[in-house]
Length: 240
Image (cartoon, rainbow, N blue to C red):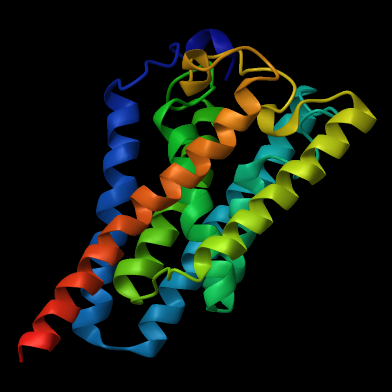
């Protein structure tokens, strides 16, 4: 199918809205099912399906990128934050553990969510890039929601220094690759060409510290529900 048969991607158009709705609805429904069934086997099966979907989408992107000549040094390496979020998510799905979970939680919600809200793709469904992008990014977010709601995993205050340290390590690693190869992983050398939150930030390099501040702020926002839950439980415990 030639690109001429695909309609241009419409931000928050019908296809985009369906992807966003499924990204939230599917993991929540599966979480309810897993809790009602109270089956470890079902939980593990759902995790493996999510992991297979994410890795399958990632492999599919490399396949279509190679076939169409889109693959180059600027996109072939897993040095964007969504790739690191993917790795942390898949590791947690296959081997549930606190440290990879908290990376997946904060990187997915603070980073991957921004990607799926404003995808940098040219064409709408059923363009392969739309399908791959939606399954990959939506799968990461959906997996984190299932791990959190369905499997009752959660971040803790001790998660903050670990996630911040790993995020700074990512920025250093991506920056080193960008400098060595003349590429732009992590948008550390320039802003995205498509509309994004970067448009509201100052010019390079002044937006880099802004990214750090926004990253910490977003972590606080995504931790807030657990902070409030702990406060309410503590208040009830003191009154009982």
